[in-house]
Amino acid sequence: MTARRLFITGTDTGVGKTRVAVALLQQLSAAGLRAAGMKPVATGGESTPAGLRNADALSLQQHSHGRPAYELINPCLYAPPIAPHIAAHRAGAPIDMGRIISAYRQLAGAADWVIVEGAGGWRVPLNERQDMAAIARALELPVVLVVGLRLGCINHALLTAEAIARDGLPLAGWVANQIDPAYDTAEETTACLAHRLPAPLLSQCGWRQPCALSLDAVAA
Image (cartoon, rainbow, N blue to C red; front, side, top):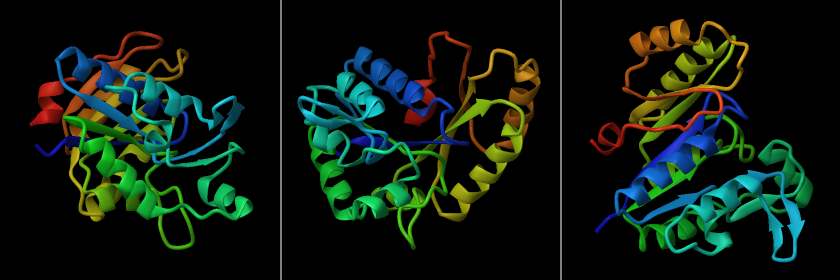
């Protein structure tokens, strides 16, 4: 059986992509499904006895069925917490799309669902020609957009949705994630985006509250 799959992107870095990806993995597991997480490209690796590791990728591994090998979860990792294309250039180790595709296929071969989390936003460069969207296109992944609720997010969300559509991928849904407890127009912002975004609202994740998503919507 071919694994179901999703690509988690965000309006920016630090908007809660990992939070949403882990919540999806937990819900799929609770539903009796074999779910695996993947973060193809990550920066901000820390040295451990097992080698260089990224905290977000470790969270995905922890909540993945069968605890797949770290190298499958995160095939391209760089130590400095900077833009991926800059980190790759400094390391002299270009981001390898072939390695990413191979790792994804291995995960998909042993799972019912694969949740792939991008780094940063949709247009974060990977190299001189490709951006993060190239991974979603190569793997033909429907997209879930995580909107970090803060001033400016409406513009960022609408522009990202337009870019996803131009790239020919379906927007399966979006998540309103409260990342700033002082942002007091979260309800109005969410209502505005619900009216304007061409996809269902999967969840409104409160500040430091459990994030439950509508699995029926993403599985449709």
